[in-house]
Length: 122
Image 1 (cartoon, rainbow, N blue to C red):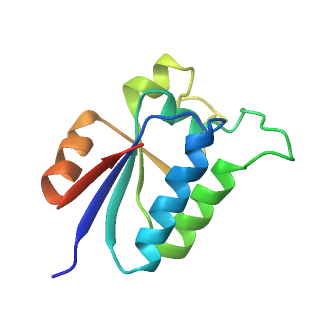
Image 2: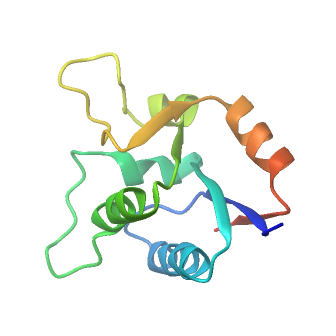
């Protein structure tokens, strides 16, 4: 049975650690580790913000998460409470949350940590 990994992202998309987190997750996926989900919490929820403006010459974390989601069917969970505290809402039209992210509660984080062999927080 393969190793199961859950990842918790608390760093914002404009942090240097965002690129490290993405590289870590991508490497795990490419080596056959079953990344059962990524949970975005605290400032990590800003990765899903469609209104955030990152300069074009800087690392584009949101695009990379979207690619990983599409290429590996990677589940991207967004903490609803942390998102709402930072102005992200899925109950407005148009929503300001990237549609590749699933709005979830802390129960999803508990489930991911229960199912995983290893949990990494970045």
